Image (cartoon, rainbow, N blue to C red; front, side, top):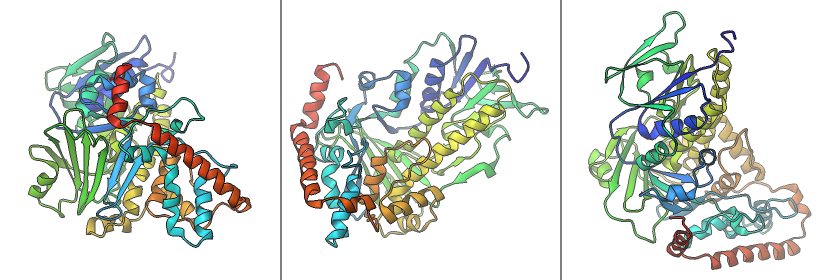
Length: 499
């Protein structure tokens, strides 16, 4: 077997626990019999943080972790999405929920039919109002109710995409305990020095602060400590998105006391100079404030997020080439999108899946690195665009938010917005991460009215169509009426073991 065919036998993954274990869990599940994994977990606690994960997240499916396991976590509570407050004005509310596609009528999207109706009567501003009855998951969330996804494709509840809120550290612990460790060497330490080969430019050894040295064929850095000790990472490879997310400060704190029983969804509140994200957990809640430090004092930041929390610099962006030589950078070593819509967790899950798709890796890993970098970049750009979309469409008038709207958008997001504004068409790219319906809901809900509708909608008999859509809306309304209140739904789930 020549050098190009020999495979990696020893992999070392190093970083903070909440970033290390999502990668290590999936990697450990996919190790071949002749491979060894070393997990070097940094010992310090890194402050409070909450994450939201969809129950049908492909990452969890690959790990075989279902709702039962997630809901046994002490902090876990079920939800349906995120309420965006103040984005279109101080008192505005918009529920963003995961959602399966709305059924089409005669192969025409419902929003196109509603658009024709609005434009026909010269009332384009009514599009969002006409469309709202068909946003069943959002209506259920607004009503303080809860439902799981139905497996029956004919049921309106097949559109449901429930989520779970978790304390980030509890999630890491769940993943750490989700598989046998007999094939993994777990070390608690921090990288102290990195030895790089002068000939090949690859990492030969990582020295730890406990006196141990790690020799491996491939190193995975999920938190940036290894990268910071080498010159392998080029600062020019970092693509900043601070123009589209003009905030430079992140403060997170735990709020004492159990959250109100009627307030079980995450709230992302747009405020002057920033965004305050409050995530309820089972016995407490976590506030995460992303803001422009020039817009508010440290005291004002703490008043909003809470005292005794964890503050850090916020630098949104991502690497274009995170895999160089025998070093792969994932997590915060490669990207930063922030806590809004749990974007950092979404990115880490996708990175772990992409990397695992390339197992086993050859010692001559140029091909694997090139393909990983390509797919990483696609994921980073999609997450960037989805996170920036509501910022770009916000109606707020303070300086930081105006700066977001005035910033130059990426080419891909510009294409999506231009196409939707022109003819109500959603443009899908390779390996879409987010639901098409969520994109459409956001664009319509935040005020985009396409200039023209699908020409196929012109052929519809609108009198007949009105009856059909009223029937569909009534079916959604009947489904909503039969769905129990949140506490009752969760109690029923507990009775059958989903607790």
